[in-house]
Amino acid sequence: MPEETWKSRVGFVAAAMGSAIGLGNIWMFPMRAGLYGGAAFLVPYLILLFLIGVVALTVEFTLGRTAGGPIEAYGKTLPGGKYLGIFVNAMMLMIFAFYSVVVGWALKYFVTALTGKLLSVDPGPFFGSISFSTEAVVWQFIAIAITIGVVIMGVQKGIERACKIMMPGLFVMLIILAIRSVTLPNSYAGLEFYLLPDWSKILSGKTWMIALSQMFFSLSCLGMSNVVYGSYIKKDQDIPLSAIVTAFGDTAVAVTAGFAIFPAVFAFGLEPTAGPGLVFVTLPVVFQKMPGGIIFAVIFFLLILFAAFSSTVAMLETNVQAATTHLNMSRKTATILFGLLAFVIGAPGAINPTYFDWIINISTVYLGPLGALIAALALIKLGIDKAYEELRKGALIEFPAIWKPWAKYVYPIVVIIVYVSQFILG
Ligand code: PFF
Image 1 (cartoon, protein in one colour):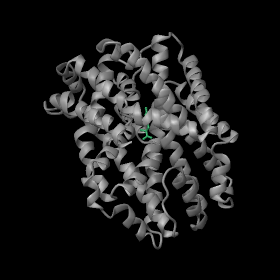
Image 2 (image 1 turned 120 degrees about the vertical axis):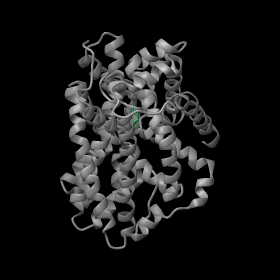
Image 3 (image 1 turned 180 degrees about the horizontal axis):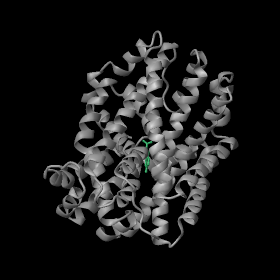
Image 4 (image 1 turned 45 degrees about the horizontal axis):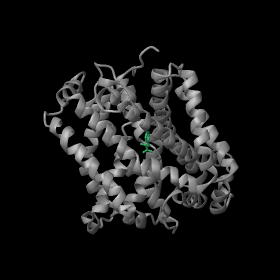
């Protein structure tokens, strides 16, 4: 295996942002902001992003560039580390498996919007008939096949190139949708719902915990794919500025998604509902009522697909890196094999909602933050001075030396607090 690298700085940033920006931004963030204090939710989120989010990204990228993918990096630094590396790879496969089910739904909606039929269906029963059905399995398979198609072409020619096309496209589509949404008559109530700060909420510990776990998932900081992406960064390519751009770009997209969704929902007198219903039931009703709605429906579901595929390629690449490095497999074999494995694991989730919820809970809520913690511990064992030196190589901006105690103490302690709180707060 020739060693993989990113072709350019910009390409790496596009890939890192692509991995970060996903269903977590467009589907989860606006809903949680709406529930946990509106604009007031942004206060803990932005504070945590500054204090922890940017550091988390630098930790995982730096660890990857110094020590390689999760199996190598944890194997070199932690007792039983090789198995921890295998464990996080298994987690990544689970996340990919359930994520691809939702990408499958989005594909079905995109195609239905393209043919114009989305305007004539009854959104509630329509979603009921395709989610958790054998048809959902077929769409999930197509979602995985597309991901395989990109990853098989390699890091530079597949992932980097695809993200360099999808990211600018995503920004343009999101801005079009947000402008349309806030300029609809009667959209004001939606702005109020989304933005009116409920300051009482930011005093609650739960709001901070939700903000933190949301941030980890959104930045893909789970000790998995970002370590792999880090291992592809050349010594003369920048880490600090890339981490800052990724963190703030990801947040900007999440916040803007709320502007694209809530004003439109309220403009047509609808209620924002939690979970899949918001995007897959409520928004189709909005598109049916909106003049020229079908165009916006096509744009919206394409936006979701760009966000989702630039994330699924990071997930599959994580397993491919492990298999090509440790199982002596070719990229082609590894990509197809792990894509099919994700299909087999996820397919029951496409049919059975209980199993689907179970995979989501296990892999994101309980095991995700554990991955972030493992990465933090591995970096500490590697030696914080060595890590800081590595961080400065090729850097376009320099982090002050306070980065060292920050990465060594503040960051892991916060991760532990979040992790424990998941069990206490549920
Ligand atoms: N950050 C992605 C999102 O917000 O949807 C999810 C994700 C992508 C998690 C890649 C993990 C990963 F490796």
